[in-house]
Image (cartoon, rainbow, N blue to C red; front, side, top):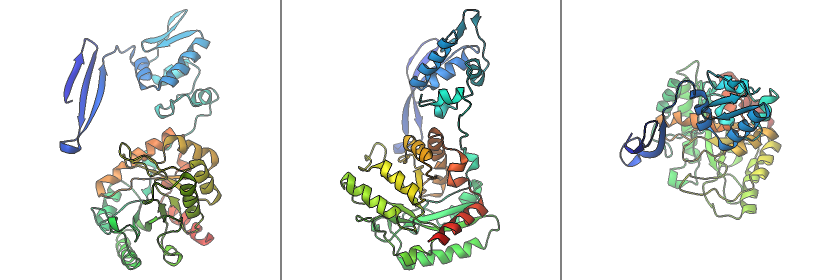
Length: 363
């Protein structure tokens, strides 16, 4: 805690600091003290969202109760609930996970016992989109692999930049092949872990890819991403991305809107058309877990789930410690009602190898 803005007997407003130096983040926060009896109701109320709270109050009223942050009151007195699941049960609802509380259908789903199973971080077996010192990363292949193993991952994809992105030291075809040989050497070290050969290949302005098909065929997977010409008109950008998704060697679309939170707006693109193209061509769409991206957002994650587009979350790690950012992508996926079956990261080592091999055979 950095400083106290104001305080009373049961409430204080503070500024919290996360981190040190120029990279420190400051967050305004309220601290509240409530009774043990009121805690489940206060926790539910302040978790929100406002829209979900309104829906719960309406549900309570329909059952003859009054719900607020202090309790659940009825004609026969207060109804005691020891925790949030008990509160939802008292309202005739299955427990709604906090990530789903947006009043976008979760209350009716809780009534109908149709809430989705949500993916969790412990189910993530590996991630695809990561960088090494070969392009603009800070760690070597081996260092990235050992960091992934320390997280309990069974596989790690390396997706260094392609040749045209010179600002990020993009790899030439010759350097790509050198990296493949290094991956082959390292993979001999482990029997229960594998480095996958990937690339984050630029989608050029006309929708073509930065490597030719002969080289693309040698990768285990390909992440196709936009890094240039962000100001193209909406129709042109959409057609550009759709064309890239038509390439049979593309596995997934990286950071679909190009946004950088608080720094750069998303480029103009018809995401519905992009998702439909991903569905048509059986491509995965990335939830980029870099906390400055979180791209795809949760609203479009839910839309992807609805139409049957498989998602994948990647930390876009440029250093070994950034692999841990995967948690943020999982949280976005959970807000989008995504379960383990809809997230490619839940494939174990044999599963991911089989899936990628099946995709190559279709080309």
